[in-house]
Image (cartoon, rainbow, N blue to C red; front, side):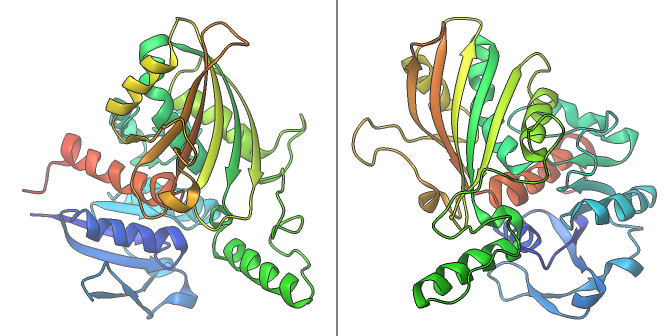
Length: 342
C-alpha cells in the first residue's frame, strides 16, 4: 500500500520538478494530487514521462485529510497560511520555502547530512527543506566535518536565475535577446541588468550590510551541520539559467590534506568528485543540469591558514537544491517513520 501525496505549487519550476522526480524515483504513491492557486485550477500537468497527466486542484479549497505527505513549493506566504492547515488535518508537510526553516520545533533536513533530525517532525507535522545554496554546500562539507571538524567557512556563490523562478529565467532570456537586437533591456525581476552581468545581491539587505540569502546560508548551515561553525557568505546572481556554483574555503580544527579530502568526498553519499588537475577537469553548471549529484572539483590545500582547504561545488539548484531534496526527505520519512508502503 502506497502513500497519498499532494504537491502544492505543482505548476511552478520546482513543483514540476518534484512531480518529475517522484515519477523518476518511483516514489511509492497510490495517488498524487497536483495543487496550485486558483488561476491554475483545472489545467493539466505532466506527471513524469509516462504520458500521465494530473488535473490541477485549487489550494484554497483543498482538503488534506487522508493525505500522508504534502510537498509544498509555493512560496513562504502560501506555506505560512496553508502548511499548518495541512498539518492539522494529519498530513505531514515538507516545505521548500523559508517559512519554517529557523523554527526550533521544525527540523531542517538534508538526508545525507542530518537524517536523524527528521524525528522532530512530530512537534508540528512540518519538515523544512533548506535554501538551495545551503543544501549543496552542506552535502560537500559533511564528510569533511566528520573527519577534521570545521571551524570556519568562507563561501562565494554564483547562483543561477532559476533560483528566482520562471520570471528570473524569462528576464535573462529576454534581456539577452534585446541586447543583441538593440531593444530596451530594463530590469524588472532583478535590481540590475542580469544579461552579460553579475549582481552581488540576492534577496533584501539586512542592517549589517549582508543580504537575506547570505544570512540564510549562515544560520541554516549552523542548524543542519553544527552550531559552532562560523560562516560568512557573499551571494551573487549570475547569467546562468540552471545550476548554482560555489567557491568554498574551509578552515578545520584538525589536520586534513587535499588528498585525504578527495578520498572522503569520493566515497560520500550524494557527492560526485570530478577533480582532474588539467584543462576542463572540473564541473560547470551546464554539465550538472538534470543530475542528482552535488559535484565537487578543484579540491586543494589553502596555505594561508592552518588546516585549510578550498573547493568548487556545483549542483542543479532545481533538483538537489529544491525538488530532489524534498523527495529525498519524503523517502527518508517513509523508511524511518511512516513505513506504510510495501
